[in-house]
Image (cartoon, rainbow, N blue to C red; front, side):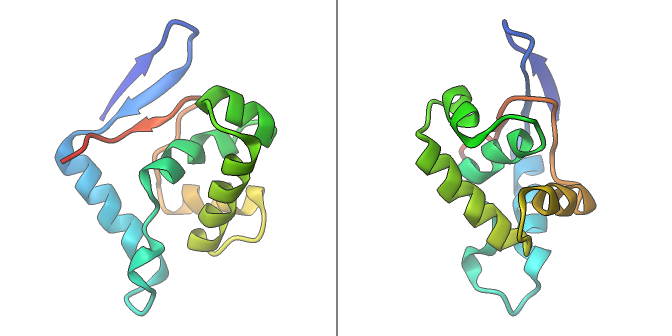
Length: 113
């Protein structure tokens, strides 16, 4: 895993292929073997996750990621559901419990296999 500071001092994390596969396997296992196959967080949800830990509102997160606030809200609700959380703070706590990647700001970049 490599952290990079962008031109605006934003941080992003670049995972190697094996690190990305390991992360996907951990995420898939969060809800246990009886959960449906779609419980792993998508790439879009992984990019959103670090920003949920900030003070930014959904419209502000959308501006950071070039998404509408409605898309951010939809992805956040999906993250909450997949992590078994009912609030933003609970989702952040659950992601920390499961040692999901977290950076101060910016997306998590996962290479395409």
